[in-house]
Length: 163
Image (cartoon, rainbow, N blue to C red; front, side):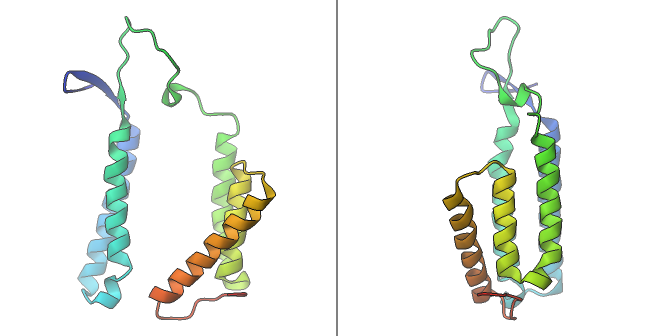
């Protein structure tokens, strides 16, 4: 229990530890990249993304604090953090993880553009999206923007099929 400004909060220590691990991994990677070379060509992608990732960690960290409930208080609505996982939640996590593995293996054969489109499509379908227009358009637009963005900042050709 943590007391801030006269209010009691429960700390979700598992989430805090996970965010700490992510922050340490990002920091280590950034320091390792900077120890190799501080040239802008080496850091033009790594440093901004690392700083953005650390910023996201700081943004998410306050969400690990939940208002404490005292026995005298009657909860108005159920806190989603206190509920059990939904029945298909773990299956979806495993399916998205498997899709990520297939995506990584498929890039050399299908190309970055097609593999990215299929990965986003599969992930949206696994997470419950059923509207056909969204399933086709959003992955295509996102894949195009990713390929275009990477061609602007990466000095070597990427394996693409269509783009």
